[in-house]
Length: 134
Image (cartoon, rainbow, N blue to C red; front, side):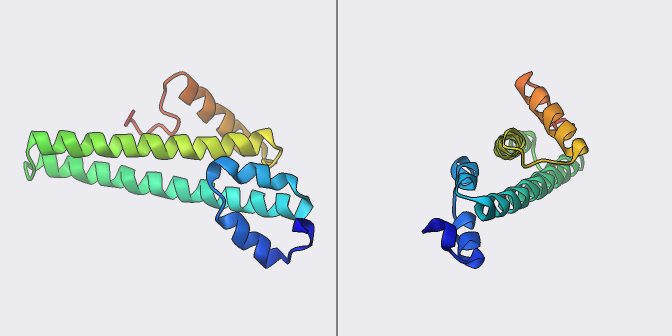
């Protein structure tokens, strides 16, 4: 039955699947594989955008601290919160990227290298995106 659903229904179902189960849905058939791949790329991009937004917030916070608009304790607390948030978003993003790579969803060699480098950096405790917030 799942292999006969209209593509629009498949898209809506896949959009609601959590990251941890997303790639498993690609095993249904070719249409599901394509839709899971599209959704995984979409989530990858969304994580990258969120990480960039949080990084901009960290930089803005630093500027406020330098101008003495906030005290040291507030700066440290908020900065630590932002860093933990970036680390969590990065973990979630790398999880999707790794699953895509392992399931043949990444075909571009440059993307493949980017994923392998980021995963290696993360495994060794580095900063995969070079943001300097680890």
